[in-house]
Amino acid sequence: MENSKKLVWSYSAKNDLQTIYDYYSQFSLIAANKIIDGIMESSSKLEVPENDKIGQFDEYNNDFRRIISGHYKIFYKSYSENILIVRVFDSRQDPIKLK
Image (tube, rainbow, N blue to C red; front, top):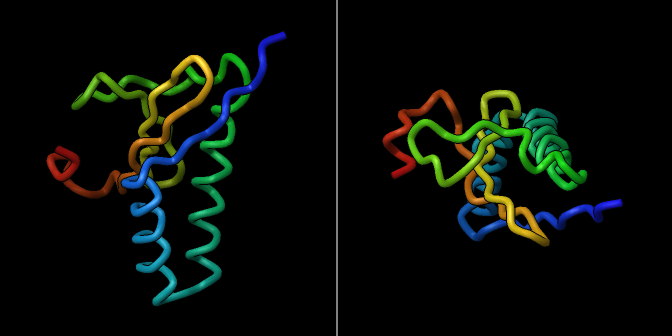
């Protein structure tokens, strides 16, 4: 049986989460927490063996896969022992901002 992989969040991904939380918490702490919880729950699915390949390759940068949580794309890269969450991006924004 294959062991689960550990999620590792890049500095940029952690910053993205903080930015998302800060923005929505201005209007509603409940909404901000719900969005962050959804992103965390979606990303935790990647830890399950064989789930590290559930995401699609991104059309703008095929070095990374992505999964969706609400309006957010969670970009990640799978390694032998961990999953690196690279960025969390609001899909309603212009994807050119990711470059």
